[in-house]
Length: 530
Image 1 (tube, rainbow, N blue to C red):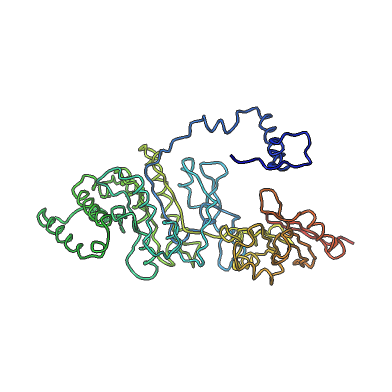
Image 2: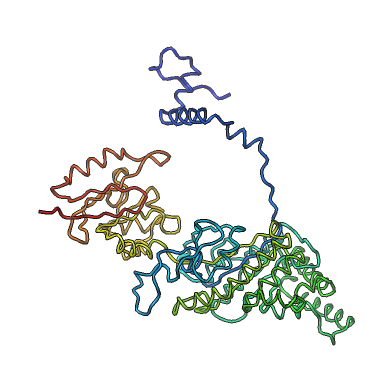
C-alpha cells in the first residue's frame, strides 16, 4: 500500500489524511474545482459525466465513402471560403486580392460560397463545411507529396508501400458485395513520368495485401470495357490465359520471396476479378445503361461522369470510391496562371455533378449511409493574403501578428516568419511552442521583429519586448507575455511586463505600448492635433 507522505507542519488541527489531500491540491486547482461546482449547481442540471454514461450515443450509419478529390490545390478563398471580394482585372496587385469572386448565399444561414457554386450551395443543408483543415509541413510544397500524405497518413518517401485510405477501409469493413471491388479509384492516370511515380506509390494496398488494392478506372466512359471480356475470348481461352498468368506469377518476387499472406492476396484478387467478369454487378460500371436525362445531369466532362459512376458503384456495393479531377502539373486546379478564369472553368465542371450526386443519394435513401467528402491537398494561406487588405481597409499603422504554431501546428519556421513580415506584420510573436522548430533558436537572435514570451526563464534565446518604429514614424513598445494556467512553468507575466514598460516609459521613449496575446493586433496611431 502506498504510504501517505508526511503532512505539512503548518496545518494544525487537520488529520494526516486531510493534510495529505490538502498537499495534493493547489490553490488554483481548488478554486477551479469549486467554481465549476458552483456553476453546475446554479445551472441545476444533471452532471454531464452522469449524462454521458446514461445517454445513448448516436450510432454510426455510414458504410460507404465517396471522396471527390480536387487535385492540384483548389483555392478555398475562390470556392468554399470566400473573403473580401476584389473584382479581377489585369494588373491588379496580388496584395489586394483575397477572393476574385463575389460570395453567394447557400441553403444554410451564414454559410457563403463563391459564385459558380450555386448548385452545391443549394444542397448544403445536407452537408458540413470544415474550414479548419491544416496541411502538414512536408519540408517543401509538391502536390504529389501532399496527396500521398493525405491519402496514407505517411510522409513520403517510405521504405515500404503504405496503404491508401481506400485500402484501409476495404480491409477494415470487408466486402459488402463479394462480386464488387471494395475500393475503386476513378480519373487519375498513374502511368508516365515526373510526379506520376509518387501518385502511383499511394494507389496501392501496400502491406494490407493485393486483394485490397484499388480497381483503377481512368475514363468513366470506358469503365464497362474493364469488366467485360472480349467477345472473341471464349471460356476455354479465358481459363487457359488464367493458368498461364499463374505460371508467370510463380517467377515473380512476390511469389518467390513473399510469404503465404502475399501469395494468397494475389490469388484472392484474381478470383475477385473472375467473379466480377461473370457477375450482374458488372452492369454498375456501364454508364450507357443510365437514363439519358440522368446522364446529362452529370455530364460536365470526365469528372461529372465519374460522380455518376461513383453513385452506381456505391449502389452496387462498393465501400470506397474516389473520383478525382486528375492531377496534371499546371493543369486543372493547379492554377499557376490565369487563375481566375481557370477557377471559373473548374467550378463549371464540379458544381452540377456534385450537387446531383447528393440529391440522387438522398432520393435513393443512400445518403444516410454514404459519407461524401470533397477535399484538396492544400489551398491558400488566409493570413498572408488577407492581412494586406485589412491594413489598407482599416488604415492600421502598426500590426502585431501572433505566429505561434503558424508552421502547420509546430512553432514558426524562418520561411513562414518572412511571409508574415512581407504580408505587413510589424512584429511577430511566439508562445509556449516557440522552440518546436529548431532553426527558430538561431534566427530569432538576428530578428528584432520576432518576440518570444518575455516571461520565459532567463537564458532563453531572443527577446520578449522591443521598441519598434512603425510605418508612420511612431515608436511602439511591444511586449509579448504568456499566461501560466495550463501551461509549462514560466515566470510571473505581470512582473515581467511591468519591468519592460518601466524600462521604456510611455511618452518618453515609446509613443504606444502593446502587450500582446494570441491574436492579430492592429493599432491606429495619430499624432495629437496642435
